[in-house]
Length: 168
Image (cartoon, rainbow, N blue to C red; front, side, top):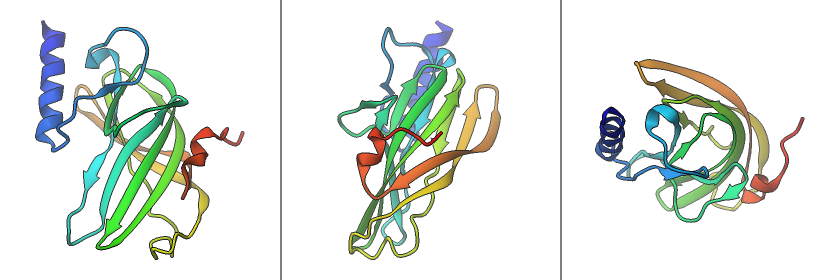
């Protein structure tokens, strides 16, 4: 009963936060409650008067996901995540694709914050780029624990990056 209430509270919080989406289960087997899984959180920020950023997860653990995934439920442990960020400012739109490894814990929500693309990449001319960066990730766990960490990530202007092996 308590687990069902926690899952319902989580779904309500996601809907109230503007996400309006139920987490997509990105693992095999039966669904697990939040205290036995972890969440990857994307979504949108900004408005018509600023740069709008939309973050989604088209690749998790090497599996290309169909549809638009803003929130994904994963099991605790090591994961390889591919994210897509769409930046839009007025008529200019630019996408960047990042891939990173993350170790998740049960009962925690992980929100990656993609870096600003390199200077000149928002020119609207389709400039290609590829770079290694530190990706900030905001983490919020059950019991009110909140912190940030930085993960090594590779970002590029093309999604071919998702199929590449990370450098050792």
